[in-house]
Image 1 (tube, rainbow, N blue to C red):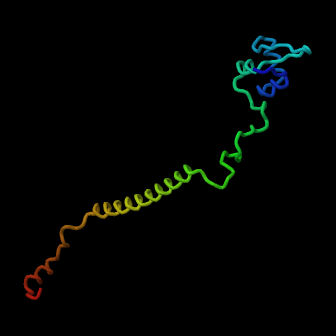
Image 2 (cartoon, one colour; image 1 turned 60 degrees about the vertical axis):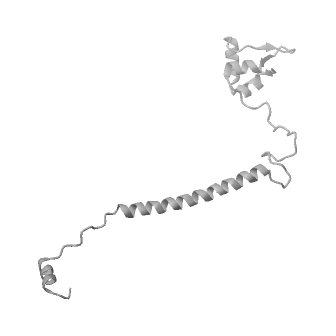
Length: 139
């Protein structure tokens, strides 16, 4: 692992200089001395004492081994055949879902119409209507 100055360690651990010096004095953080008698701290020691470090060590993006854009797609105008196949499959599934939703709505309509009770008995006639029916031969 690499050795870092106190300033670099402060940035990486996102702690103040005072915190680092206090932890070094209390033995919570080990350090070494460089050629000019300045304190240096190893990366693994920072991780042990403070957990995950901030990514300040590599501010510029990594260079890619292949030609491409930042999002990983090739620069050439040709799309990836797997992506094209997957997009077609998703579109087909969306169409099937729409058809199934329409079919489901039809079934729901049928069920709600069947659930409505239809009157099984015709409306009752009044006494006078029944008498007219009995004595009127045209009906």
